[in-house]
Length: 445
Image 1: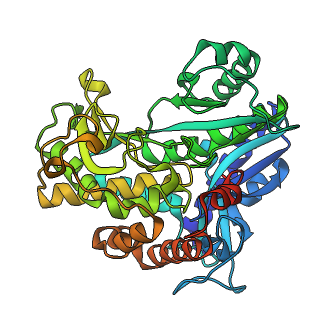
Image 2 (image 1 turned 30 degrees about the vertical axis):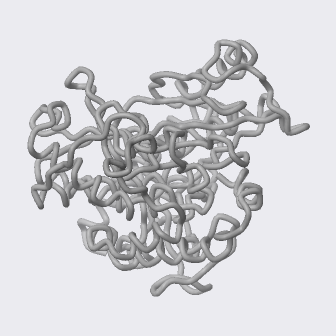
Image 3 (image 1 turned 180 degrees about the vertical axis):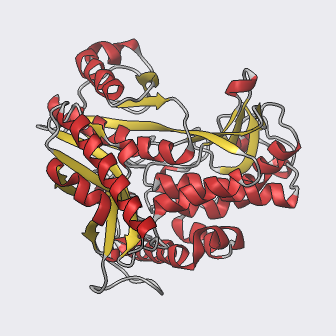
């Protein structure tokens, strides 16, 4: 170890000790080091707070096999990953460590993954999101991103909905006001800036939105929001599901991604100007392939149906909630693109990184948008009706495998791991009745 490396280790250890002291003062005794696998499941290694400095300097061991875990905890293999061999190190992002108020004594810290020799793990999804953000910064572009979180609650004791109130109704908020109050307090105590919290369409369904931030932090917060919802729900005798499909024929849980692009203080999506349009055109062009990242489960396609505000058609529109890519105008600072076809089976780091990669490819190609779609695409006359996006995971996987944009962005190791997981889940659940698919995934996300 040279002097520069030794100095860096000492600085990291000092930062970790300061972080541990801060967390200890808030009653923390253990830290959950989390990352999200390619099946969209948040995995964890817990460490006592007294070991946080060691974890920050030396990492915590975890097998690379989790890159090929499936939603049901079965495993597959890819060209590069799989099997019992090898080990990785998890390193906590100390600047993101926060206490979990709904889990007394615990703190949350997202982790980056490295090889044993200290080089970055090529399949680290969080690092992928950071690399795409850096790739944009080289072009002078920064992003503000946020994920919407939808979930459905049932009583843990009997599986019944805790409210019979109507969609979007005050009735539901009144029935569960204590629960929603405690949730709001817990989210704010995590340092999250809640923008709105409201009942959604499906029975027992709610949605929360938090303020936009940089892409990696937005993905971190998506994990933190869900962990907090799950913990507060448990405190109130409720069980929370973030699954894309919860009941046959019902409206499932979306995970819409909002993204704005900025250069020199200007929002490129406010007009949009040329690079803003090219960014949107790049995202639109890659949407079929992006579904393998943003709607990655067999159950995702039970949600992605026409006339359900899910974004089932390959089109964009201005303030059109049926378009897969919706341009939200509003004041210049608030203008952003909403990717409506994504859900919470997605790894949020893959989802946001993939969208950025697609948009940057559009800028490089000086891509141009087609005409926007107005109204429900399903109701348009046949000649004017846009194509459907993939209607099952197999179609999305075909589009993904054909995408040179996403292969270049992800790199071969991560790209092949994602493809292997999608193929294995399609083999396991594809073609099974909707009831079976939903039962297998309802409580996994």
